[in-house]
Image 1: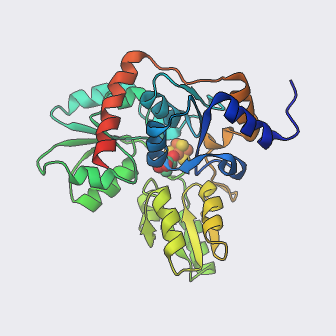
Image 2: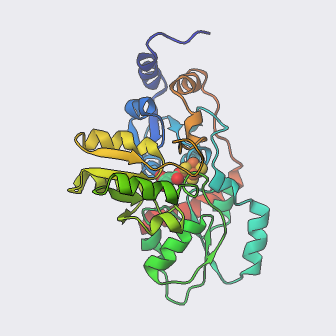
Length: 309
Ligand code: CIZ
Ligand code: SF4
C-alpha cells in the first residue's frame, strides 16, 4: 500500500469514517499537533479521554498515556501509532521491585505520577500529574505517610512546595534529567533578559536557576502572559510550537542536554510520525490492550486524581 498524496486530508477522512478523536501531547512533532482534535499535557489529555464520545481514540503520545486512555475507556479502540513509544521514567519503575519497595514501607499511601505503567498505577492509591501533584499532597492529612513514585525530581519539588516528607522512588526522565547546567549558564550570559522556565522533572541544578517552574500547560500559559520577550525553555522542545503560536513576537530558546549536540527531544515521543498515525488509523492497529484486572485496579487511583484536581 502506498501513502496517499494528501496525508492530512486522508487522516481527516479516516477520522470521520472511524468516528475517531485524535489526542496529541505537546511533545509531538508540529505536524501532529496541527491535526489533533485536542492537544494537552497528561492531565488535560486524560480528562479529554475520560469525556470523549468518539468510538476510537488515536493517541499521539507515549505508551503510558495511551494506557491511561484505555483504562478510562476499556471498551473503546485506543490506537498508538508506534507501540515502541515508551518512556524512560515509566521504565525506571518495574512492578516487582516496586511491590518490594511498598512492602518495606508499610502504612504508606502510594502517590504515583501519571508517567508510569498501568501495573504501577494498579499498585497505587492516587495518581497525580505535574499540574496537580502539590494540590493533591496538600489535601492529605499532615501525619499521612507517603510514597511518591516514580520521578525523584518531581517528588523532591513537591516536598519543597508542601513542606512534607515523602519516601521517593528513585526514577527519572532521560530528557529532563540530562539538561545541562553549563549550557544553561552560557545561554543566560548570551540572553541576559531571558526568563528561564522549567518543568519539575528537571534536576535540582536546573530548577535552582528557574524563574518559573510548572507543568507543560503552566509553562505555556506563563510564556503567553509574561511581559518577557525571551524564554529559555527547560522541557521537551515540542512545546515551543504552541508557545510560538500563542506568542509570535517572543523568542523561545530550547535548553540543550549535556551531550555535544544541541539536542533534547524525547526519543520515545518522536517515534510517532504523521505516516505512522495514518497507518494506525487505516489498519486500526497497533492498539492498546490490557488485562481486565489491571485496568480495574488502575482505574481507581486515576478516578481519585480526577476527583481531587
Ligand atoms: O515529561 C513528560 O512526559 C511530561 C511532562 C508529560 C506531561 O504532560 O506532564
Ligand atoms: Fe518519558 Fe521523559 Fe519522554 Fe516524558 S519526556 S515521555 S517522561 S522519557
